[in-house]
Amino acid sequence: MKKTSKKSGSWRLIVSIALSLALILYLGYQIYSVNHDVIKTEYALDYTYYQTIPLQGFIVRDESVLTNDQSGVLGYTQASGSKVSAGQTIARVFDTAQQAAIQTEIDQIDKTIKSLDGIQVEGTQLAASAEILDSRINTAINQLLEITDRGHTQGLNSVSDDLLQLLNKKQVALGTAGSFNTYIEALNAQKAALVSQLGNSGAPVTVDQGGYFVNSADGCEDIIEYDSIEQLSVADVENALNAKTKDVACVGKLVASSEWYIASVVEQSISQHISKDDWVEITIPLLSDQVYRCQVASLTMDYAASKAVLVLRCSQMDGEVAKARVEKIQLRMNTYHGMRINQSAMRVVDGITGVYVVDGISAVFKPVEIIYSDTGFAICAYDTSNTDALKQYDEVIIRGGDLYDGKIIR
Image (cartoon, rainbow, N blue to C red; front, side, top):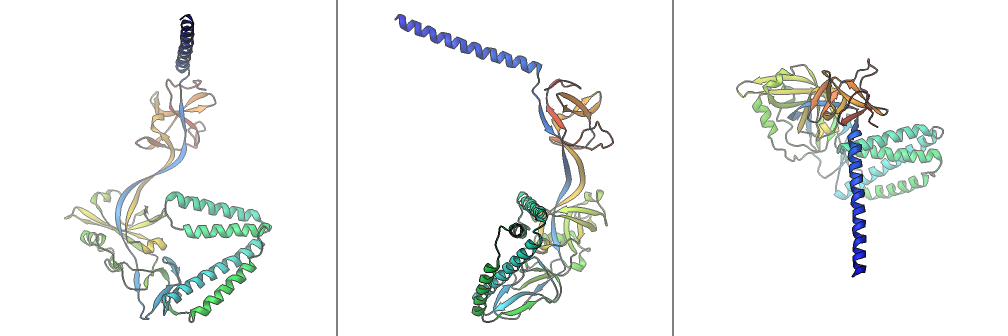
């Protein structure tokens, strides 16, 4: 019984010591916290914010549907959305689907051979200037990262191909890659075998004028006349926006002009912000991250409908716009550029709005000019004339109590 009592006493002593240490640590932390405020910081970073109006737009182009009277299987020689010249072959008509597939394979071999020849020639020429290739490789990598970040695939294949070519050129320039001649000879032999199977090269389908080629039509090409775009009513645009697309039996279509339009139904209050002939910027987020500069072709009020028809004109044609029809548009109304600051960092000292920043081991107050604010953040103007003003990459205090100019915080 005595042994049990001694053991019990030892445990009580250990527990008492542990509790005492925990209490000492807790009190120490509280004393430290009182004398040293725990601060949280964020860096002032360059930021651009766009105030936008969301629209639904119907895209109108100078386009014509391409037909073909020849019977057989089409094999396209141009990618949909590619730019073509007058007289260029866009497709070939074959007797069978197998022939069309063989021709596609031959075209791919030709493309590979051309690429390999270019790699060898340019790689040898740049052997003494590897830094040029390094710069181009870095540019291609950054473009690839931008494409993956934005979540769109536009340009992905092209940039990937460019990067692969540049990496191969770098190997040739450094002498770490052998000649591609053997591989090219094998490709030529494979091509010769395919050509013998093909029998004939197919009847060419050409275009009469240059423009952008699209390998399909959606049946909406004539809903709004290209030449009557500025005389639209609200009903005209709403009917177009609600029109159903359909498959059309054709070779495709040709967009002849680089000038295209977007027709939208908007609130009449938009006239307070823009008017005819104004220049604006738009984005089409689901299409690409491209910013399109447009001019207001017309802004027509329909007072009976309490709405208006907005028509924008743009001359930036590309392969994606050539294929698009009804899209969600973001119309940029105002642009604010400055430094993005957390709203919790804002303080008013002697009637002046500003923020505290970390300067060495102390806090320093810097006045700011807020040019735009929204939930959770504000955009502050740059003041290059004042060396003491807030600057990009300043460490801004967004949490900390009892701050004042010169307070030791670290």
